[in-house]
Each structure stands twice: as structure tokens, then as C-alpha cells.
Image (cartoon, rainbow, N blue to C red):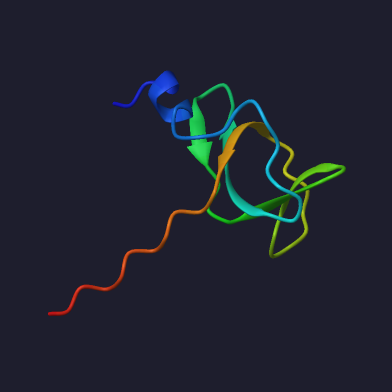
Length: 75
């Protein structure tokens, strides 16, 4: 199992993303850390779901640039 410190090491925790950047967001609650399944954008109000505009109401502990999607493997 990945430790909290190992999980946080993959994310920026001490700075905000560039203006208008789409990012992956790592949140934390009483159970542990989890990656949101959608991209977010930082606004003056906080991080928002890029597709719905909904404000993320969980504790955001880090962010990172989206990882490229793996190409489908030919059969």
C-alpha cells in the first residue's frame, strides 16, 4: 500500500497551478487520499470541476499536470 507521503510526492503541495491550467487534484478526508476522476481548474473561490463548474468542497492537498492517456494497445 502506498503511504500518504509517497502519494503526496507525485503532487505539488506548496504552490498554485498556473492561471487557467487544467490539473488533476488530490483530496484527503478521514479515510485517506484520493484522486478526483475529473480535471479541475483553480478559481478565486477554489478548485472547480472543469466540466460542471462545481466547487470542490473537499480538502485539496495537492495537484499535478494531467498524465497523458496511454494509447490503446493493438491486438
